[in-house]
Length: 323
Image (cartoon, rainbow, N blue to C red; front, side, top):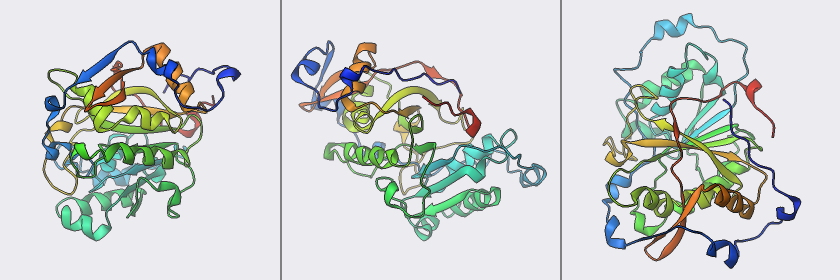
């Protein structure tokens, strides 16, 4: 994958600090959104990856698995958190099975819930997918808190890629619990990653009137600030859904129901940098990579909509480029 490189800023700017009045006052574009415009059913915000139905469209090819022999390639280590019945991981590995047969051995699949609880929640899929993942060589861990990855002794010390799709805790967005969860997640992930490593996060792309995308990314998640505070800068975004992972279907956390709000999604790729929060803000402001929105009286930075790649990524360790 050819990834855009992060600009090196001058030593003068290499001082940590918070945004000054001057920094915030020259933001050109301000979005003032009324509270009534975004009254949302909290069920539609149940966005944590917890079930992917890949029973019919994805090859159930145990025979093919037997024929494919892993090559000695060394793949980048990947950690997938919040995967519920482990079906996102199954879809990811199945998609790349022919070209990257050894990928599963580099993947660690996890969820906050314990194994027995997940069996009860997903009686038709959990054991099916976990058996496939284990057979292919993936590592499965349960009871893994995405906000305390660095404190979990069962995890490795370094992951080049960390996936967290549709993070959600089941609470109404007005409680503002998700921005705090994302801040803790990025902070924890940063301790398991090096410069140039990436966090990949799928979020809904909201269609409709007004600035709902700004509302979701700025207020519901506050993802831009959560990432920047921990030294991550958005690199690009990709399409995410059944077209990218055949058979994929998102469901609400802990339930076998579809979350309609996640039907049209994008995967945002954030790269870890050595830049401070203020340096990221300044660099991104110059490039127009965020804009200011005001929601419920709270001012937030909202990710700008960048072009979407169809399907590009990198897997082999040898492809990692140093900054």
